[in-house]
Length: 125
Image 1 (cartoon, rainbow, N blue to C red):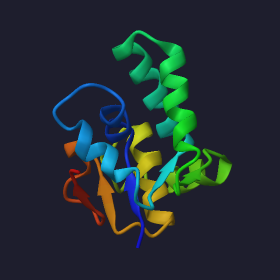
Image 2 (tube, one colour):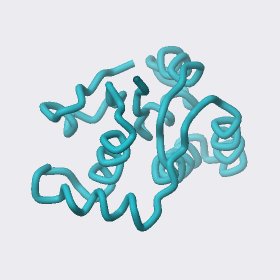
Image 3 (tube, rainbow, N blue to C red):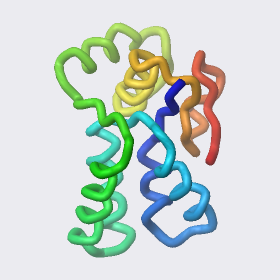
Image 4 (tube, helix red, strand yellow):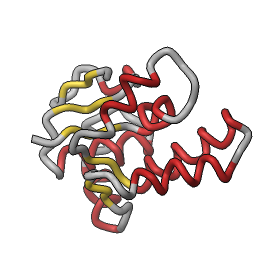
Protein backbone atom coordinates (compact mmCIF):
# COMPACT_ATOMS: atom_id res chain seq x y z
CA UNK A 1 0.00 0.00 0.00
CA UNK A 2 1.04 3.56 -0.62
CA UNK A 3 2.33 6.04 1.92
CA UNK A 4 1.16 9.64 2.14
CA UNK A 5 4.03 12.17 2.41
CA UNK A 6 3.18 15.43 4.17
CA UNK A 7 4.52 18.86 3.22
CA UNK A 8 6.86 19.05 6.23
CA UNK A 9 8.73 15.98 4.94
CA UNK A 10 9.04 17.57 1.50
CA UNK A 11 10.40 20.76 3.07
CA UNK A 12 12.98 18.85 5.11
CA UNK A 13 14.04 16.93 1.97
CA UNK A 14 15.09 20.16 0.26
CA UNK A 15 16.49 22.25 3.13
CA UNK A 16 19.43 21.86 5.48
CA UNK A 17 18.45 19.99 8.64
CA UNK A 18 19.28 16.82 10.55
CA UNK A 19 16.48 14.86 8.82
CA UNK A 20 17.31 15.82 5.22
CA UNK A 21 18.76 12.46 4.13
CA UNK A 22 15.90 10.46 5.67
CA UNK A 23 13.33 12.71 4.02
CA UNK A 24 15.05 12.60 0.64
CA UNK A 25 15.09 8.80 0.74
CA UNK A 26 11.28 8.83 1.06
CA UNK A 27 11.08 10.51 -2.34
CA UNK A 28 12.66 7.52 -4.09
CA UNK A 29 9.76 5.28 -3.02
CA UNK A 30 6.22 5.30 -4.36
CA UNK A 31 4.18 7.78 -2.37
CA UNK A 32 1.02 9.86 -2.41
CA UNK A 33 0.81 13.59 -1.81
CA UNK A 34 -1.44 16.35 -3.08
CA UNK A 35 -1.17 19.70 -4.79
CA UNK A 36 -1.84 21.48 -1.49
CA UNK A 37 1.30 19.88 0.00
CA UNK A 38 3.32 20.91 -3.05
CA UNK A 39 2.18 24.51 -2.74
CA UNK A 40 2.84 24.56 1.00
CA UNK A 41 6.28 22.99 0.53
CA UNK A 42 7.21 25.47 -2.20
CA UNK A 43 6.23 28.40 0.00
CA UNK A 44 8.14 27.13 3.02
CA UNK A 45 11.25 26.12 1.06
CA UNK A 46 11.34 29.58 -0.57
CA UNK A 47 11.09 31.24 2.87
CA UNK A 48 13.79 29.07 4.42
CA UNK A 49 16.20 29.30 1.48
CA UNK A 50 15.20 32.86 0.57
CA UNK A 51 15.07 31.66 -3.03
CA UNK A 52 11.78 31.18 -4.90
CA UNK A 53 13.50 29.77 -7.98
CA UNK A 54 15.19 27.03 -5.95
CA UNK A 55 11.86 26.19 -4.35
CA UNK A 56 10.14 25.84 -7.72
CA UNK A 57 12.96 23.63 -9.01
CA UNK A 58 12.43 21.37 -5.98
CA UNK A 59 8.72 21.07 -6.63
CA UNK A 60 9.29 20.42 -10.34
CA UNK A 61 11.66 17.60 -9.37
CA UNK A 62 8.82 15.96 -7.44
CA UNK A 63 6.78 15.87 -10.64
CA UNK A 64 9.41 13.51 -12.08
CA UNK A 65 9.13 10.98 -9.24
CA UNK A 66 6.80 8.01 -8.96
CA UNK A 67 4.51 10.02 -6.71
CA UNK A 68 0.78 10.05 -7.12
CA UNK A 69 0.01 13.76 -6.86
CA UNK A 70 -3.67 14.16 -6.09
CA UNK A 71 -5.21 17.44 -7.24
CA UNK A 72 -7.06 19.58 -4.75
CA UNK A 73 -10.43 19.69 -6.42
CA UNK A 74 -14.09 19.82 -5.48
CA UNK A 75 -14.22 16.07 -4.77
CA UNK A 76 -11.25 16.10 -2.42
CA UNK A 77 -12.58 19.15 -0.63
CA UNK A 78 -15.95 17.40 -0.26
CA UNK A 79 -14.26 14.27 1.14
CA UNK A 80 -12.42 16.47 3.62
CA UNK A 81 -15.51 18.34 4.75
CA UNK A 82 -17.41 15.08 5.26
CA UNK A 83 -14.81 14.21 7.90
CA UNK A 84 -14.53 17.64 9.54
CA UNK A 85 -16.58 16.76 12.63
CA UNK A 86 -14.88 13.39 13.14
CA UNK A 87 -11.29 14.67 13.19
CA UNK A 88 -9.89 17.54 15.21
CA UNK A 89 -7.68 18.81 12.39
CA UNK A 90 -7.26 22.21 10.76
CA UNK A 91 -8.52 22.53 7.18
CA UNK A 92 -5.12 21.92 5.56
CA UNK A 93 -4.43 18.84 7.65
CA UNK A 94 -7.95 17.58 7.05
CA UNK A 95 -7.46 17.80 3.27
CA UNK A 96 -4.16 15.94 3.56
CA UNK A 97 -5.64 13.25 5.78
CA UNK A 98 -8.64 12.81 3.48
CA UNK A 99 -6.20 12.42 0.57
CA UNK A 100 -4.49 9.59 2.43
CA UNK A 101 -7.80 7.94 3.33
CA UNK A 102 -9.35 8.00 -0.13
CA UNK A 103 -6.10 6.70 -1.65
CA UNK A 104 -5.90 3.80 0.83
CA UNK A 105 -2.55 4.85 2.26
CA UNK A 106 -1.10 2.52 4.87
CA UNK A 107 1.07 5.19 6.56
CA UNK A 108 1.04 8.95 6.96
CA UNK A 109 4.64 10.18 6.79
CA UNK A 110 4.82 13.41 8.76
CA UNK A 111 6.45 15.19 11.66
CA UNK A 112 3.07 16.70 12.62
CA UNK A 113 1.81 15.06 15.81
CA UNK A 114 -1.74 16.27 15.05
CA UNK A 115 -2.04 13.08 12.98
CA UNK A 116 -1.36 10.79 15.96
CA UNK A 117 -4.14 8.46 17.04
CA UNK A 118 -6.02 8.40 13.74
CA UNK A 119 -6.88 5.39 11.56
CA UNK A 120 -3.74 5.76 9.47
CA UNK A 121 -0.58 5.48 11.54
CA UNK A 122 1.67 8.55 11.51
CA UNK A 123 5.31 7.63 10.93
CA UNK A 124 8.39 9.83 10.82
CA UNK A 125 10.92 9.11 8.06
